[in-house]
Image (cartoon, rainbow, N blue to C red):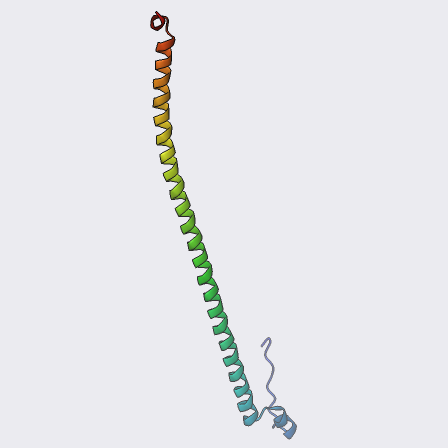
Length: 111
C-alpha cells in the first residue's frame, strides 16, 4: 500500500516510554491550554465590545451629519420658495411699471 508504514511489533523499551508524555504532563498541558483559551476568549470579547462601541459612535456621527444636512436642505428649499415668490412679485411690478412708462412716453400721452 502506498504511503502506509508497516507497524513494528517490537515491545516498547524504557526509552520509548520516556518519550511519551505522562498522564500528569498531559493534565498540566491541558490546564495550560485551557487557561490560554480563556485569555484569548477574554481578549476577543474586549475587542468585540470595543468594535461595537466604535461602530455605534460612528453610526451616531453619520446620523447626526445626515440630520444636519437634511435640515440645511429644508432651509434652502424654503428660502428658494420665498425667493421665487418674491421674484414673481417683482416681475409683475416691473411689467406694470414698464406699461406705465410706455404709456407716459407714447405720443398720445404727451398731447
